[in-house]
Image 1 (spheres, helix red, strand yellow):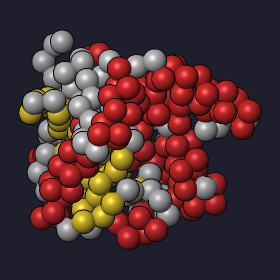
Image 2 (cartoon, one colour):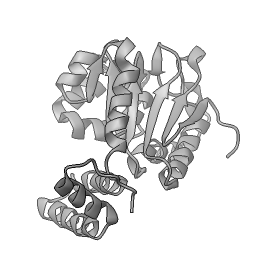
Image 3 (cartoon, helix red, strand yellow):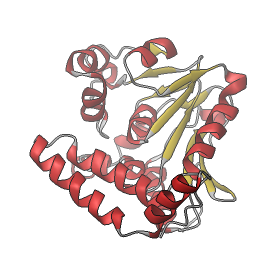
Image 4 (tube, helix red, strand yellow):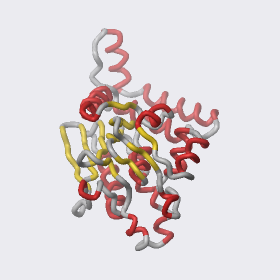
Length: 257
C-alpha cells in the first residue's frame, strides 16, 4: 500500500490497531484515508494471525470530528454516492472490530463507529451526524445504520436536527456498548479484546456474518441462514475442542480450524 494518509497501523501480537492519526486536525478523515481504510480492513480480515481489530483516534480530543469537508467539492457526485462502501469496511471484515471512542465522534466518525461491532466510549464522548447544518445528509451509512440501531424516531431526532448526544444518552439508547471514565478506556478495550481472543474465531466470524446479513430480512430467511452456519460450525475442530473442553472442565484452546 502507498503511504497512509492520516492513518497508522500497529500490531501487538494478535491484535491490530488502526489509528486515525491527524490529532492537530481532530483526526479528520480524508478522501484518500477512506479508500485506505477499506484496504486495511480487507487485508487484516484475511490475516489468520489477527484475532481482533481496534479502531481509534490519536490524542485525547477526538475519535474524529469528521471528514475533509472541502474535499467533497473536489469529487464528482457519482463518486460521493459510493462512499458508504469504504466506511462499511469494519462491518465486512470477518474479525471482531472495536471502536474506541473519546471526545468528538462526528460525521464519518460516527458512521465508522456504527460499522464496528462494539463501541467502547469514554464518558466525555460526543456523538453526532451534523451534516444537515451544511446542507447535506450523512452519506456513508449513517442514516441507515443509526435507524436500525436506535430506531427511526431517535435517528430522525439526531439526523434532521444535527443534534449531538453525550455518552449517557448514547448508552441509554443502545448506541454504545460500554461507557467508562477516560482513564479506564484502555483497560475496558483490553478486557473486551481478551474476552474475544479466548473464543473461536470461526464462531465469531460466522456470528457476525449471520447477524449482519440476516437481521433486516424475513424471520424465515434469518433462521435458514443461522441454521446453515450452525451446521457448518458442527464440522470444525474448534467446535469439537469446545465440547471436549466443556466436558473436561477446562478452558478451550481454539485454533480457528
